Length: 257
Image (tube, rainbow, N blue to C red; front, side, top):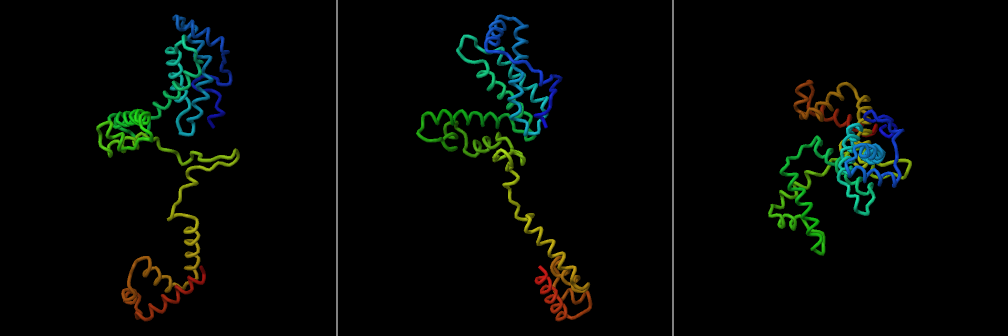
């Protein structure tokens, strides 16, 4: 539904401006010299870039207005920090800045709170993995990273797992352009699957064909866990009769199912 939303934070996205490469270059130079009007025009002219980026994150259930505002913060940082002396396109520099700002927002506003010390350890571990990968001939293991940091393997493992963003059951894992397969389609439930559900229905239908006394015996025997002797004492018949009625009831249930 977000893809069809026209107004975000009071901005009509259908009327967002676009700038040519020359216009961007000229405005960047003026903004670098302190021209606030040029800075504003540059920000306004790149809002469509923010919109295209935040649409990658709409399946997380976050408010689109909030993501747009956060993305704009990343855009503003990109405008203020862009080095016009380098031979780099502004969008090449701005895109990771905007994505980084959105990811920080999603991380810090995650419903699963992770302590700062754990997050810091996780980020140090990620940096260590990059450093070790550059010097080792293989991908560094958790043991290698922990040894490099002087931390225990368990703490490093827990920290890395803590910063993994939870996925939604509705996240697509495959799409051929028409039908998509979602995470929930790949999860198996051994207790509440279609086969067990159908067996439960068949059992209930078979139970309806039993006499009231047979239903009572089956219920007491298999749902309440009572012995044949206890059932016999309760309903006033012999154990042999209970055994015979139970066997007959089970045979009919099997035939019905």
